Amino acid sequence: MPNFTSGDGVRLHFEDEGAGRPVVLVAGFCAPLESWELQRRDLAAAGYRVIGFDRRSHGRSESPAYGQRIARHGADLHELLVELDLRDAVLIGGSQGASAVWAYYDLFGPARVGAVVTIDQTPRMVNGDGWEHGFYGLTKQNVGTFFAGGVPDTGRGLRQPRTAGIAELVELLGGMPAFADPGTPERRALLQSHAEADWRDVIARMAVPNLLIAGRDSQLWPCEHATAVAATNPLSAVVTLEDCGHAANLDQPEATNAAILEFLRARS
Image (tube, rainbow, N blue to C red; front, side, top):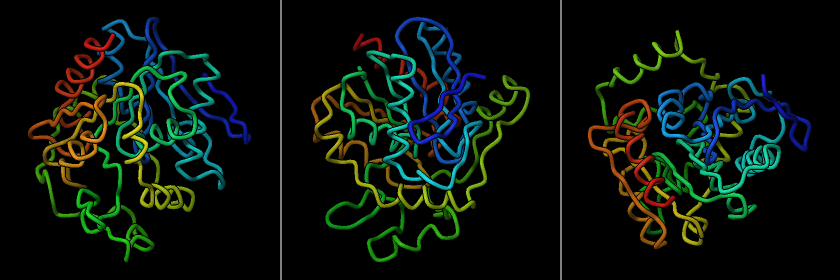
């Protein structure tokens, strides 16, 4: 299996397929790279080199007790790009994976990056101070304890699960991908780091084209987060997917893939 060792000694797993412009897929909290299979298939068919990345404590990467903060995950992503000597890369992050992408850009800038796509991740999880597009119910007063029991059910958004995408994913993989246990100490520490971050200033100064995809019926936050932050950068674009919850790559895989490919073709 293709792996490399991070600068702080952690074995990190990735998969690398195809030729052409590199696209790096970074999955959300507890999700392995296999959760992107429906996107990998269509991107590879469109002629892109597709790299799936298991962040530390995710998939087949090691899960140390240290480095469980979003900034370190951004540094890991940078080390992947350096390891593979990727240039003009497209970084695609879903949910918490989007935060890892923004952390990368915050630390290392656009030198190796040609475009960014984020999928249903609000840039600021905490509500207040004029920002009401964060995680439902999360405020400055409760941010220290809000996720102590894991990610709560907000009772909002799409309530009837969409199963067609999941069924297609299972058929392609021959089984359901293995998601990590969210309750371990290292992943709880990571979730807390994720909860406290604010990436709005990073998006505002991003010097590469970036697409924010939002689920109209996200269970975690209002879809308006995307249009609100995109208004701060003329290089930002927004696609809001109808009849779609937080897991857009599984709820509406065809629409998600079409939005990504149209964005990339228009900016190739």
